[in-house]
Amino acid sequence: MPWICPSCSAETELGYNVCSKCQTPRPGSEEGAGDFKLGDDNLITIAADFLGHIGIVVVAELVIPWLLNYLLGIPLLLGVLIVFAFFGAVVFYLSRRDGSKETNAD
Ligand SMILES: [Zn+2]
Image (tube, rainbow, N blue to C red):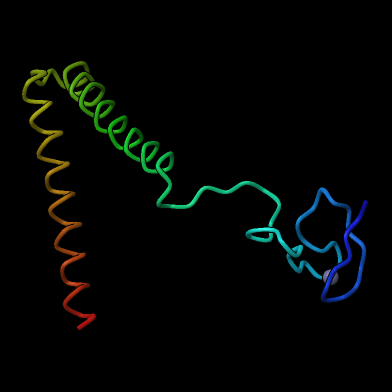
C-alpha cells in the first residue's frame, strides 16, 4: 500500500521513505532517506575508527621497520624508532595546526 506525499500528493511505495517525485521525507519516518546510516558519535563508528587507527599504527610498526631492514639493512629497533619519530612529528604538526586554527577563530 503506497503512501501519499504531503508536499506534492504523489504516491510512493511503502518501502521508500522519501517521495519518488519531490524527495520529501515520508511522514513519521526519521531521517528521510530510507537507507540505514550511522552517526559520527555512534559507538560502532567510534570503535571502527579506533580499530582503524590502531591497525594503521600496527601495520606501520611492523611493515616499515621490516622494509627498512630488508631494503636498507637498517636494524629493526632503529626502524621502529624511525616510525615512532615520524608519527610523533605528524601528531606534533597536526596539533600545532589545530591550535593555530583555534586562535584564529577568536
Ligand atoms: Zn512529493
